[in-house]
Image (cartoon, rainbow over all chains, first blue to last red; front, side):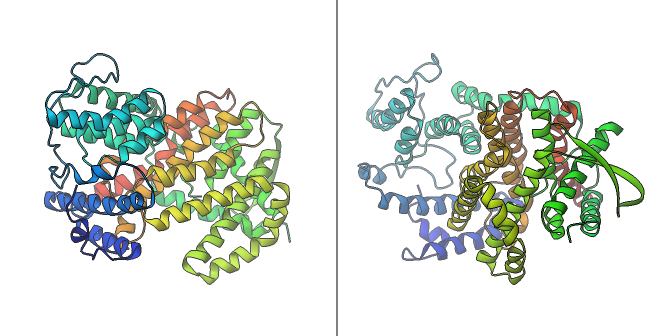
Length: 230
Length: 273
């Protein structure tokens, strides 16, 4: 969580959605990693800008919905703004048994609160209510590696494959040694490996794009002239 | 539509090349005879793939003919057509029409409005034939435009929306294949949308335009695109396609990367300099 996302984007809290988006895109133009190759400071700044923009946008969404989760938004400000490391360092499963076996063996107050936060998410998930689980997850503002891990599973099961991949990668980055995270990332990318193998058998296209475009243009031009519908 | 779904011509046999070209020519011909000649300008390779794909699945009766055209005026060449060709040419016009309308609504380009006007009559005729399909396409495009305007950072949301549009186009009729074709079209549509976003990212950021991938960096793109194509080919394998198998797989496993690879090579060359 960023304490003042409006400040990061350089807009006032009363700014309209349009002004916020405008400011976000102006900042992206300056800091986006693709325009600043190899510049780590810019990349860091950009992820902060992304987080701020997301926070403002989702914050607006919360106001319009009447969820009973309002108390939680005031918690968990311990996370660093760049979202690299979660404040808690524990194994959420207390073992590596079933695929998503979630026991909550309360280990200290901090964790117990954390576990109960995810409890509703997990019970929805275990019952197969992925959309409801995602909704419950979206109210948890403290994005630990477990948050990203659960988000990856849920998004994968609701057809949001890109988010699933990105969040599984984030969970791995935050906690590289967690075998559960490795497992889910592998599962998500399993199909890709098979696809890539077959792709290699065909070989990648090497033809120059300009000649293709040219042929298409030419073909269209000729088609126009030989039309007989008039 | 964007024209990403093309074959890797270098890896096709001469027969496959001929078949692919004549499929394109057949669609072009169908556009010319069913609709105004100008509609031939809206022809894309994506629609050519639709014709090839559905024709192979349904093993249609193709009419093969030859004619001369300006490309090769000295030599007669083949084209083939069937009912699916006509369906694809109708859908091509529908997409072009909505696209022009959308451009007019967004940017107030007078050219787009006049182009839309040009297709209005054609569109009405097609609408009478496929009212449900046209409404579904229109609804998806409206939704997509709203998502893009809201500046949504989650790429899945607009990609799924565009996927739904493609899934409608891929369902020729409600039969035993409809469900699988729908999910195949969905995945292919997602891939096309994200591929377009990948290739436009730099330009969009510079011009401060919407791009669904603004929050990610290009080093993740190949993983994302591979994941989406993996899903797409998984659905493809569920369909009993026996005809033109090598040509279709050439497109799905290789040709579809043509513009991505070209862009990558361009970048590499720039890096060398």
